[in-house]
Image (cartoon, rainbow, N blue to C red; front, side, top):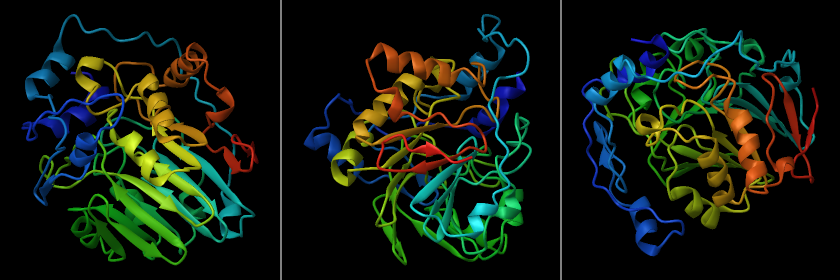
Length: 356
């Protein structure tokens, strides 16, 4: 078995579909909207109410062990751009707001006096796969009054060592079923939310939203904990963080309900083979479609270049995304492909400017 797929595959042992299928159209109908707010389980047993998950253990074995498996050629080290960044600026006040890509699904957003992290992962591995490039900023640069949002419990998004090394004062916003995991690690400053629920934090409104994914890690069974996307509103800027998701009709509804969205952080990697990954991971074309559905001003691609998880080269997704944008006549200025460690400033221009 290829270890690149094992961190995804290990969580799928015993996986069984628990939802009923529902067709998804290009325009969100009233019925489709209702499915986004339909019952989706309780702690210990969650599901996506609009479409069933087709993955099985046999599908995992077919992917990993098939003699006909197609893996893209890797010629030399991956070309993942990195810029030095000591993160010292996080201790000060930001005029406007900046976003730094730490790697994979981790961003450090510095908005005014506040800092928040998305799916913080500063570790060296995602269970088994090694980190391809180091984190874009030192973990020690995260201020003690920061807060963090977590999309789900998979190892490339939730790293126990990172949680334990971050200041204990960091506040965590997590989906249902995850608060106890944090409290067991002496991190009691945790708020657990269901889909469509919001929490207030000073000037911030932090909203948990549906995503099309699933959950499992050692100690937590299949879909015992919820998965989600996040809408984070500072009063000055609105940030959408997709976490991990396949393409689904939720993106169009989020744009309709919460727009205008300033920045959409969307995953573009870990998508091959499509027959196995489509339900849980968008490819670059689907991610760009989600960006357009959201009606966001700027897209920040993520979930590539850090952990080599699936069959496509780890540095290929942004290349494919560029081709998609060109083929569709999109505006490349509205899609900012950051280097690891790059700090990007939100401005009146949709693409902002790099500050480091």
